[in-house]
Image 1: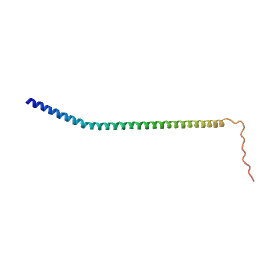
Image 2 (image 1 turned 45 degrees about the vertical axis):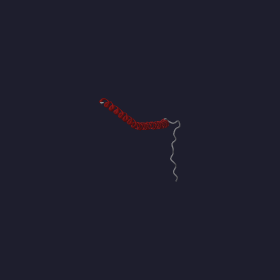
Image 3 (image 1 turned 30 degrees about the vertical axis):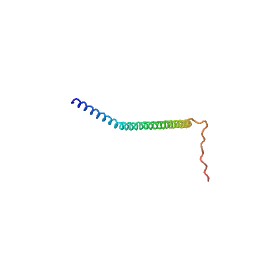
Image 4 (image 1 turned 180 degrees about the horizontal axis):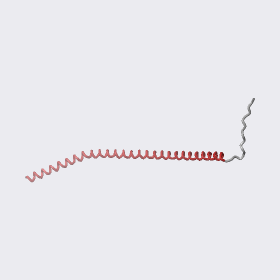
Length: 114
């Protein structure tokens, strides 16, 4: 009899463990589902963040490329302008240092009226 009682007690314990295991599994299904939802939310947020970063990066790159082109254009304009000024200054200096082919006329002061 003691042996049967021990065996019955083991069977009861097994049944309780099975019921507890089933109960825990049912409860954790909801928890697992919630964790999956939270994980999916983070995945979606990360994708959105990467998309926004890529958009911002592309816009900034395009803007900097346009700015670089404008700076290059201004630099070329300044270089051309400085070259023109330098040529004019050279001509002016040359005209003042070279003797002229025709002698200069003296300008007479205007006559006084009486």
